[in-house]
Length: 162
Image 1 (spheres, rainbow, N blue to C red):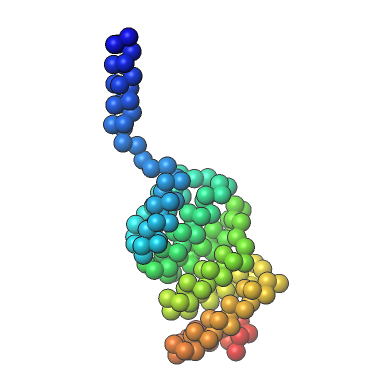
Image 2: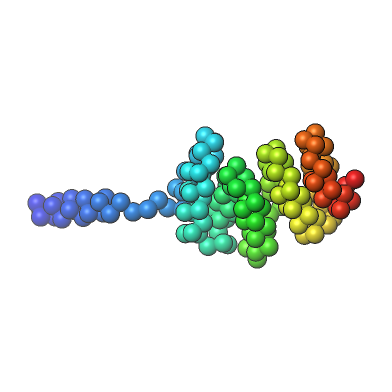
């Protein structure tokens, strides 16, 4: 009997010493927690670890991708736009109007009008009948006018917003 307890204790000790990586779900949770604390780099790292371990068809993949994009908006808006649009073009993407608006809103709030307009343009092409995405152009226009960003306004003019 003592040998069985010893073997069980040894097995548990070895299992615990493996350290192991966090699961994708744990990484998504850690990324979400980091976003809540405005710890953009930790969020990005956690979400990217989750993305590396998840198939694109998994529902958690979308949460991790959108979390990664949110963190990147704070760190590298151009990469955020690129990551979002690449995901939007993938077969596994299940983005709705709310997702598109959230990314554009966050980019606009950060003053990243060029990137917001890039997402807007792609969103209009992908969802030409979506009135909510169309309305985002007006919101970007108002923010760009307040910021005095003539380049952004010229881009919006090309999309028919001026």
